[in-house]
Image 1 (tube, one colour):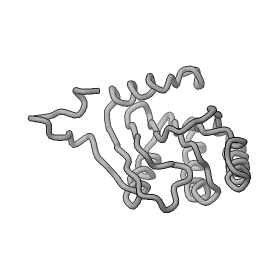
Image 2 (cartoon, one colour):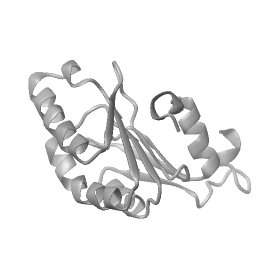
Image 3 (cartoon, rainbow, N blue to C red):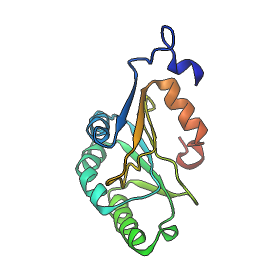
Amino acid sequence: MRGLFRRNRGVLSDDIRMYDQESFYKAFEKDLLLAQTEVIIESPFITIKRINALLPIFTKLRNRGVLITINTRDPSEHDKEYEFQALDSIAMLQSMDIKVLYTVKHHRKLAVIDKTIAWNGSLNILSQNDSCEIMWRVNSPEAADRLLGFINVKRYTRR
């Protein structure tokens, strides 16, 4: 991805932005609302609080036929409180026909929207609460494709 981050003597492209825990959700939710075909989110933890905040957006997307796939850690790998929150949240998501997958020892935090916008960083998208985090947003089909290839998304989406 060396070339994606260079423009005119190493200056970051306008298509690449950084966000912290305070600014992330406003930008991410805007991207979600503009999704036309597909959203893929990888987040190791899922909490009811965060799912409840995102549920209205997910509902709008599903009503428009946007496919949503979430890859997360198996809830049985969490302590009991997180396990119950994850199970309840996953049940809500699955009732909306959102595909939820489990990966053992999962710890990636990323999202790809319409194979064009790639988010990646340290913030747990479906559970973030009070930690100091950073997320990169790259508006580039090439970057999105590389990220999807790196996580081998075809293995679990058949797309």
